[in-house]
Amino acid sequence: MAGGSNRRGFLKQLVRDVARAASELDEALRGAADEPEESLGSPFPDAAAPEQVVLPARPTTRAATEEDVRRLCGELGLEPWAEAAVAAAQASLRLTPASVDTRSRLGGTATPYPGFDWPTWEGEPLDLLLQVALDELPPSPLPATGTLLLFFATARAPDGARPEHAGACRVAVVDGDPSPRGRPGALPEVPLAASGELTLPLEPVEAAPGPCDYAGWLELRARLAELQGVVPADASPDYLALHRLLGHPDSLAEPMDADAALVTAGIDLGSPEVDRSQARADAPSWRLLAQLSADPGLGVAFGLYERLFVWIREADLRRGRFDRVRAFVR
Image 1 (cartoon, rainbow, N blue to C red):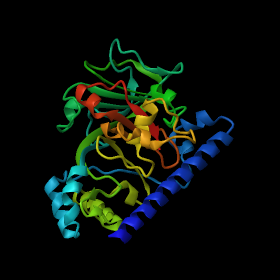
Image 2: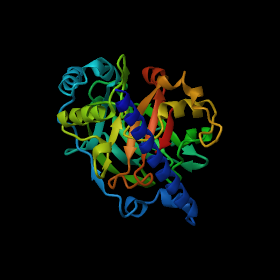
Image 3: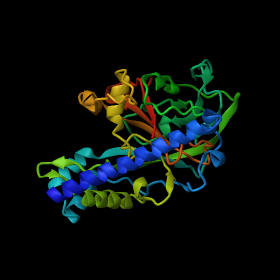
Image 4: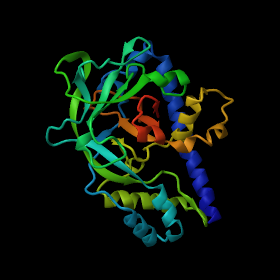
């Protein structure tokens, strides 16, 4: 298995190097523009590069179970890692365009709720990217009632690498009925439906025999997705407009749980002196709350092949504390 572990490490570093290089190139192109911050938040057809093909993500046909993971591990010769794979699996809710009208939607044109103060960052109002009627969702760690609202500074799209970027993303759960009043410049609305999905992390798990073979792990992820009627975002030849609540992020970037711990501790991720070992104790307490992708229906592109990832501490999620999230554009 040593060869498999070495290949895993090589491929893992390769995809991260590619992702980092693409991010640096995108940042350089942004800096070269005359008005870079306005270009980041422009409508999707102008903001996306011509070669970026975007396809709508599909809902799952059914949610897999832990027994499905064990069975697939057996079929692929991965029995020694089966229980570790089950432990690593996380339930997620895919958010895809609804065929009927729903109260959950991307974007939004209405002032959400009477008496609700529209959030701002550095003097500018944030965009409402997501509103989810929680009683429309399958059971999950999210509150059972109310509406989850997610706001972000799409015009500037900070990457979240600095502690002061915290206010650029705001999440709240509110009660009551939305007001019909419109808001100038609001994003278009796209009704959403949620479907359950069991997700596995991109990186292989480790168990008593050592790290799982990388190729075998990728096959396990592909088979698990196929069982649910979808494909992993990293296995698609085109960019998927894939939105989700909870679960594992669809990203090849550095682990964002550690990054959330670092920036929350006041550390600038762009500093060459960043010691990621400082996040070792706090990183496991963070989990993905929401993932939003560039989407023609939403009218926003976060960057070339990039997504918005919002992270929350597990304890805050259990307590319904959504005012301390960290967001990254990766």
